[in-house]
Image (spheres, helix red, strand yellow):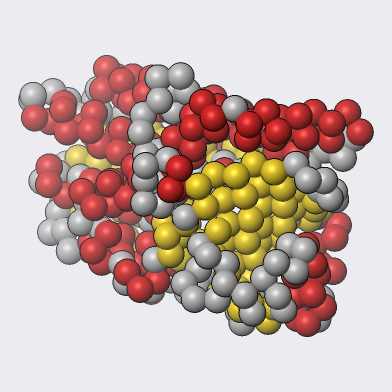
Length: 401
């Protein structure tokens, strides 16, 4: 057997979860192979994609621990001081403020592509990491003793553990016969950057208007990211709308609170599909990132959940490695899966429930969500609990995620 083709861990997918996991394994001195079908330049220097990642306090700690945070240009980081949720044209409002929660910020907004660049920069410096680009996994086989992948050019690699991090539409998950629950929201998210007359005061806005959802993410200066969610059949119209007309639509959606707006970036679109794998492990195999759980973006937990998931797996591997156990054994992966289920199940299905309630224009649904917002805003313990969950600033014993 060719030892050059033997690895401790094979990771498929060099997105944020795959790269984060590779970084988490650096100090263990494991031999790691990362397989990515796209070009090296696309992962080493990805272009801006319009998306802002809202990092929780827990995610910030993980990135700091991995040495990633210091690789991100801090002038591009925008602290989120407050968040307001509105329901349609009513006066129903839910308000979260950092200064009422003993934390300096609810979270930190960072351009998605800058996080990816920092992750690659860190991972690429590892002497024990090999990256193969522009090839896909043709087949995958696992047994009690080892795992094996065959690439599209015929190369074969063996490892103790194979980890899939290749998107919510994971081909590797499918090849391993792992089913998933998929929720097509029949919506498209449209994102662009705008400048505006008035100061946003680092306050995020989420407006569940009837027929569409409009959000504003405050960036540094009088600049924000506008996120519009519309039914799929209306997406092309909004994407092709004249910039002045689009900005007027957005400004009016926020009741003119920020004055006139001007589009200063490209408009991007992303179809909204949620995915939850039926299981997160198989023999010498594990799922992380969107391949395990693909979240709806309304609670901004997609990247954060993926980061925590890989952190759980890397800790399980580290504990096994440091005690001389097999890092790909069933007991190691069972420990990971149990924690991942505990972390993600209620979060995923709870988020989908929130989306269903707040995007349903039925009269009964409108009435219920008005009551929900008023109750949550007027009952401090509930608001505090939600804030701790969304920011991950403290662990809550009442909400297990």
